[in-house]
Amino acid sequence: MCIGLAMQVIEAGEFQALCQGLDEARMIDTRLVGRQTAGNWLLVFLDAAREELEPERALQIQAAVAGLHRIMHGEADVDRWFPDLAGREPQLPDFLKPAS
Image (cartoon, rainbow, N blue to C red; front, side, top):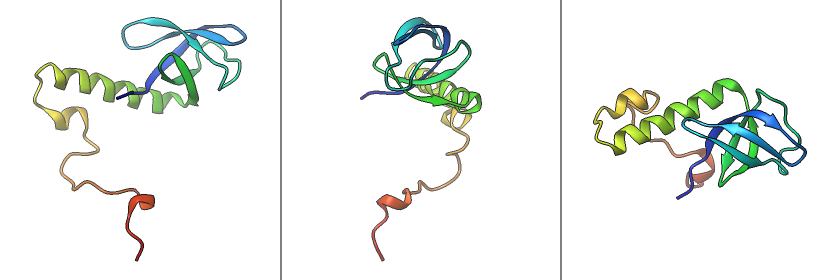
């Protein structure tokens, strides 16, 4: 499984950028999103940026990844890390719902 990570641009070149994630800095291929500037947030899969993110969305993604990490290491309070999913039934997106 591949999980997208929110990473912030530290330094940018023409086709790549040094980006900081939750626990590390890495060189990221930016050819799909264009030249970046320091401070921008990117959604990164396998060291390649797929889209630019608003800061609020980047923080949501980082919180979700941190929550997954903690749950995988034994923390049982899933609702704390995913409050938007707590106390409700899962919903299919419209494009997956059967036609009426």
